[in-house]
Image 1 (tube, rainbow, N blue to C red):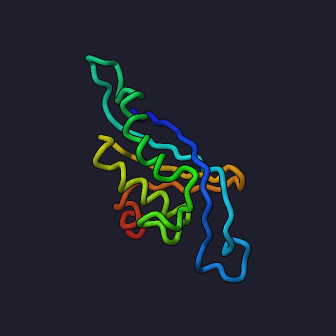
Image 2 (tube, rainbow, N blue to C red):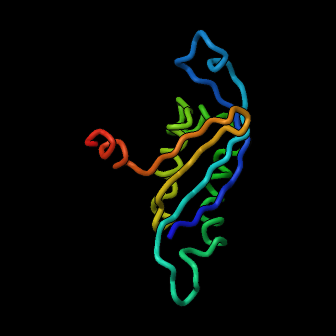
Image 3 (cartoon, rainbow, N blue to C red):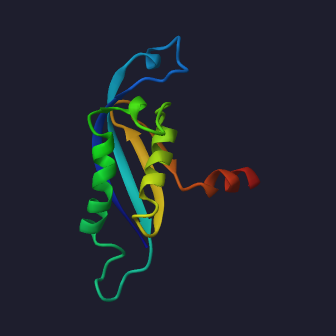
Length: 127
């Protein structure tokens, strides 16, 4: 069974490698992060994980991103959707049992990225 919880954050960034496009200039986005957990339903609670516990686990990460310049956050010098997904995974993997997937989307651009953990790239290369 999979469950998920979304949170939103507003942040500014620029892409240092994009010297000839607008993405190289400071600009902002409304982002949505979706945290997906996979696990068994606990017969005692009836839940895979209580959503209040998931919200609490995500709160610190959301605060670290919301209304910030992403380039200034450790590990996000190049704040692409891909790097934000990996950054969030690393931040949550020890706090969220059964972490299965992180999705980051820029609402203003209808773009997104799905990350399923560090083994994903190796699995894809083997296929």
